[in-house]
Image 1: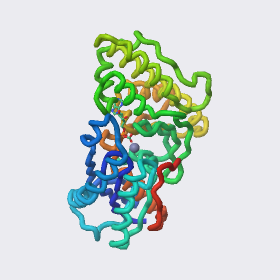
Image 2: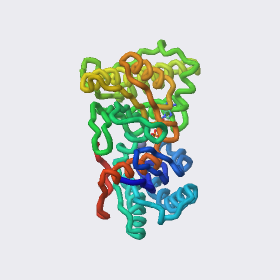
Image 3: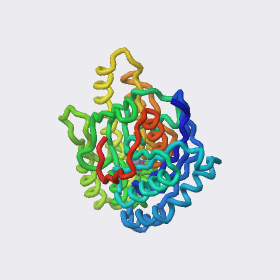
Image 4: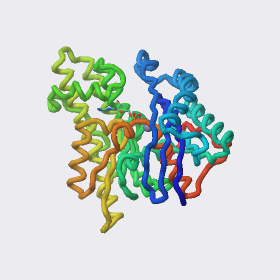
Amino acid sequence: ESTLTILGLETSCDETAASVVRRAADGRVEVLSSIVGTQFEQHAPFGGVVPEIAARAHVEAIDAVAAEAMRAANIGFDALDGVAATAGPGLVGGVMVGLAFGKAVALARDLPLVAVNHLEGHAVSARLGASIDYPFLLLLVSGGHCQLLEVAGVGACTRLGTTIDDAAGEAFDKIAKSLGLPYPGGPALEKLAASGDPTKFDLPRALLGRKDCDFSFSGLKTAAARLAEKITDDPQRADLAAAVQFAIARQLSERTDRAMKLYAAAHPRQDLRFVVAGGVAANSAVRAALQRNCADNGFSFDAPPLAYCTDNAAMIALAGAERLALGISDDLDAVARPRWPL
Ligand code: KG4
Ligand code: ZN
């Protein structure tokens, strides 16, 4: 096993991203560059990501973004040991763009290709910012995902729970929209919630009797949308935003508490590590609730720096490097998969 320098590509949603990551034989990780080209302005007028616009924007951007990542890393293609591209899950038109680009580089430079699961990228992302050892319990909360995973390494993730309808970030975004807030709604809703009183509205508590670690946000979304229609003044809007944030943070916290107890029972006499990743990890109420979970259950708390929490290519490059280090790579006929559970 030796040092691996990997070009990573990420195009599964609305960011065209490329990154060069170096992984030393001892597992230490160095991010040489991480370029994220956002399509935010192209989607904003539609209040959400439009798949067809996303795919076209990836085609237009991928070449320049990848070149910029190589330039910023200050290396040539001959210094690469492999190429890693997201192969799913995600918007398949976009996934195909990054994967095809990765295949072209692999073919032209005679490099191994790793077709990376986007979720596995998020799963390893905490290791980009700090040296966190496997295994750990991961809460992945973004606009597209809401899952609790036991992460023992690449190719070794076990799902403890997932959402049966919307992701938490999706709930933040949709409820923000019904409150008249701009896209993406999560950060705007958090700002509005700061001046609100979360006890003024009573929102439904999903899957209360269940003992598993699954999530559900659609009932909350419907209830909040109905209440938002009746709201007449700004203080009430702030109160509803605060109640929504409280309800989402509470559900994330309740399921995480269950997962921590299961995980701790399965790993007696071991260091208990918890990581939260994904865009919703930026929410301070969510973070505070999860930190309390950690304190209650004896877990350490880690969250990747925000740049690696949201979609990026460094996490894809790292997942690729860790797979290559284990001798795993993919054929050039690897396919883009819209759905690909871990
Ligand atoms: O990880 P990410 O960039 O993209 C996906 O893979 O989905 O996550 C974006 C999601 C959006 O739904 C956004 O509204 C949410 O994360 N988000 C937040 C906050 N910042 C981002 N939600 C609540 N509070 C925030 N401060
Ligand atoms: Zn993501």
